[in-house]
Image 1: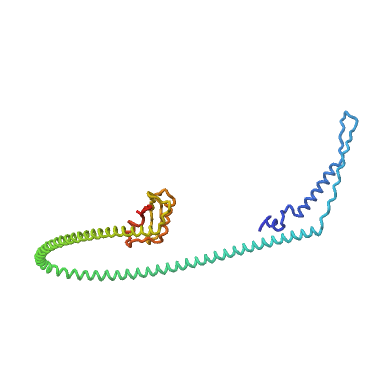
Image 2 (image 1 turned 90 degrees about the vertical axis):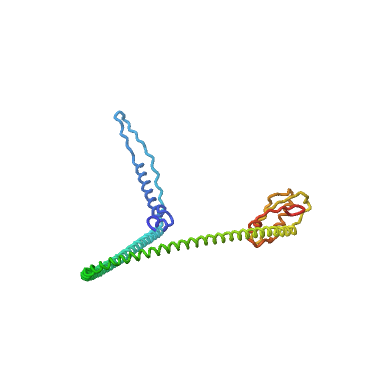
Length: 337
């Protein structure tokens, strides 16, 4: 806490309402009243004009004497001064403590900065030492590599000189042999080329025959697979139709058992419902899509559908998805359709 905020919080009232300020204001008011009274009590002489012989004397009204103000209690003044002194000492102590904390924080920051600078200098020195060591090692390796390369070059030059001498002696013999070899190689090449062409011709014929056989075999297999797939599809379709009819009859039988026809049902009433089932046979939802015109009849049909906890369903998922995931059924007073 600092400034006038500390004064305000320590006394519990603004500084201008403190006893010292009130005493100063009271003494200032007494001095002002005394000065005004003295001014009013001083007579004023008017200078008469030369053309008038009489002198007019105006008596000024006497100013009222200021009433004596009660003197403040010395003990109260002393306590107030003692409280103000303690508050001042407390503020000064707080200020000194804040300054001490700020100085300690500044010192810690300075020491931390010095530590970081030392660490950076040490890291830089270590990096420089490593760089110099790496440079020296690189120079040593470079010198060794250059010496080794020089030795290899000298050995290679000597080897090439010896080889040139040997090649010069060998070249004449080789030329004679080369001509004979080329003739032999050409004959062999022609024979090999003829055999290769014959092998390629036979291989192409064999490949064509194999491709033809494979194409015929694949065509026959494809036709067989298509026939099998068509037969399986027809069989599956027949099975699905059979399951549809059988399980529709089972569902209608369950609904007939659960349906209570209201007495108000009359011939000609038809309530059409859309039923949605889950793969487990549980009812997902039921919706009245065509009313019979009789609320009791419609509600009885809805109640019958909802009363069945699990509907009989085929095991085949395709049959369920096509015919039993969602279907419609009509309730009439005579039968279910």
